[in-house]
Length: 305
Ligand code: ADP
Image (cartoon, rainbow, N blue to C red; front, side, top):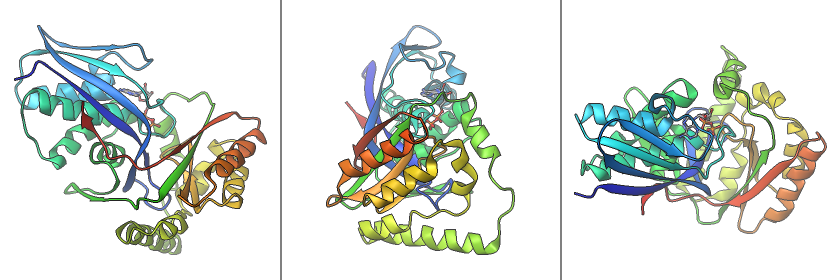
């Protein structure tokens, strides 16, 4: 049995417009790298990034704690976390750490857990960051590609994205408020009109079909959300301008990445992705906000190094 494992896990975008709390897509924009090593006693976190060091408050620490409890592992553990995914920007940062921790623990103790069980443990880690368990980002980060999350009972459906799908992400330079995810959930409507539900559902269904048919144009045209996006867009400076600019520059679809404040434009290999990024930067600039843009592709998910 090995005494240490190193794992890397990607960033991800959740919702993809109409699939609130259901859809996730792994992105090869950024990666977290974690090392899990046996030690004398307790669970210790080592990192130079500004994330919680207390295991219960750290998404990876909480996963390791829950897994050690479940499998009655008495050994001490040291978790070294090297963040690549910026925390709090809607890029699935805590999820990347949580997914990496679940895979590392499984490998270190030769558990051979199935994918669904690993997603279940990784989802527990989200309690440390978002306050509640949720699976969209962790399922994408762990399995890679496009995922559909069904709950009660948990069921994850993974679909391989089309090869020509390209994403342009803009990460605005904003100060992220504490409990951002809870705040951005707080602005959502408690009730919705049936006709709005029908429109979002038709787009979610079309998006699933787009991934099944490997049809990037169909995916892009399905990124339409008339429920969550209108309720959250005021939290992102210049949102309307950024969206308009991206679509005018040729983006196939555009929405908020997860709970924001990052935004994501869907494009294909034939799109002018540099033009889309420049257009998004100009949109944020019109609201006196700087942003960092990144062109990326779907990621294959978590891997053991
Ligand atoms: P996002 O999905 O928008 O990146 P997160 O769900 O990752 O947002 O939440 C970020 C919050 O989670 C930050 O306040 C951060 O301190 C906390 N957090 C706890 N553990 C981690 C971790 N291992 N990596 C990143 N953020 C973490």
